[in-house]
Length: 75
Ligand SMILES: [Zn+2]
Image (cartoon, rainbow, N blue to C red):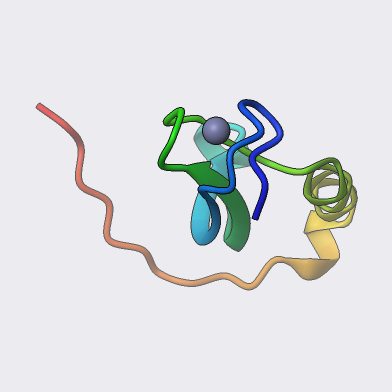
């Protein structure tokens, strides 16, 4: 797909888990589509994805599934 940063046809969508908030308010959204471009090296969320992320944040209480997570701290 076309990269909106550099206009090159080198952008691909990757599904990644993103973490929002911190401490006990921290939560993870899985399978967030991130556009990453091999031409300019940028990665970004589309306006549509950002909109959906905002929606999920508003409804996270109802949508959250509690799961035990293994966390590794760097250093
Ligand atoms: Zn690009």
